[in-house]
Image (cartoon, rainbow, N blue to C red; front, top):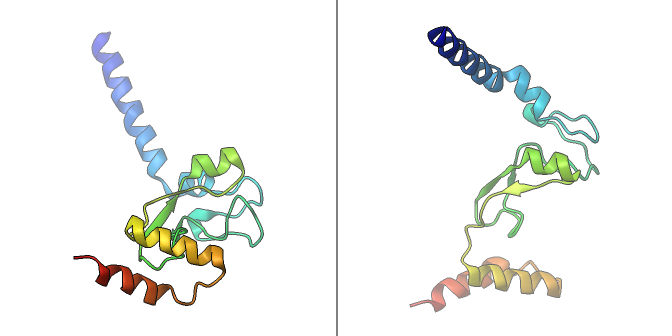
Length: 124
């Protein structure tokens, strides 16, 4: 009986693993609960707060992609909060991030590349 139970549990775990990795499940799970756009199929709706302007991947939101980092959607957080949530890290140094944010607050982002070059050349 014990052997049958262990075999059944192993078989069930394998089935669950197959289900979770199937494209059908991913399409169902990675779908916006607000507008119905399927992020898994690279769809999103403009103006939808839960979609946040992107499907499953987006350029770094801190520096607007200047660092080259790609962030991944946190599906669970996006769905539970009805707002886009992203996991990732900015590739800029903390100093570069601070300078960028300061420039953004001042409303002048056009000099960001020059500003980042200034920061990188100022370091020993």
